Length: 416
Image (cartoon, rainbow, N blue to C red; front, top):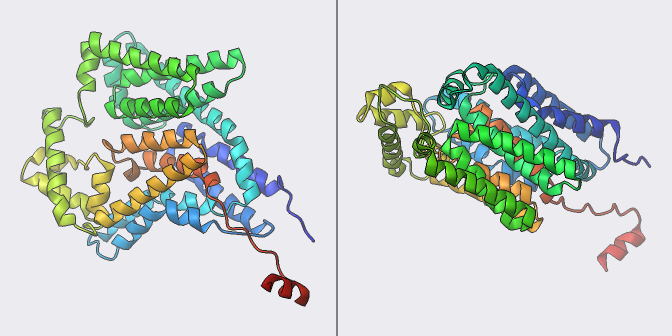
């Protein structure tokens, strides 16, 4: 009888392809899309060359619930063209869980063993991307205010804007904290601390409140769950630095006090933009009701609401700047409940399996989504799906397949 080799060539191909996924922040959009396509194809090939193939339905359904609600909204969306465009953007919410649900138990174990190395590759890619940004704007680095403004205006060399760069830096910081905690050698701990210092300073310079708060909450939660002195010391150092900047740096304090980071529109004050967006989003909740306006119409309804309050906001086509409100407007209370159930299911399995890194990153995204529509831009949804799927796939056990009964004696034995 043919037996499965736990490290066969198909498994190796999957493991190597995942390394490419964590290098995507350094790649242009088209190259990243190709990498995702290769990963899906390799996962399918590995599945059909696996002994005792089995699909992980529980994992697939739980983590894809939001996307299922998006598909359901197509039945009542009027702007089908826009709905299909948004469905395409959100496709990683379906493609990643679909691909990982094909993984055999042995491949899942191999992925878990490689997690530390995947994290290293991701942190390295974000450090390189950050260095590219620093070099690209080095001529104005002497003036931190000008340095900050130029990054916001230019974005990065690979087309990533400053907001999503700050999200990646926050993710890389949590990942480096994880590596620091696991470090057994002094030189590794020193490298981790230096990496944290560089990334944290750049995060503060970018001054996106959503990224700083989400990182701080996730870091504090991770330190609380692990509860080790070395992590508490690191967390307190970062907290003291932020408090010091808030106290003694007026420019940092001014940036930090902005709840929503959106570009100025016709000289409107940030507070006015924030108030109008929130006001319209809340006004539309009763109309959205149980099923929402549909994936193709939620944003259009929001923009129509701006029409009676600010023509500048309508022309700029601002979204809700809150992922949960956006989900409610698109797919209603029912869709929001499905999304919340999916997140809480991941949190529950993470706690049961002591998956502290997965929980920290889940919380980081959860807090960040209070101020940004992460799942409606490719720069956000790809990494939301990538991290959560890879970090939580090991928490979902497949049902044990019962052995095939081959004789009447075994039939009788199974009935007793």
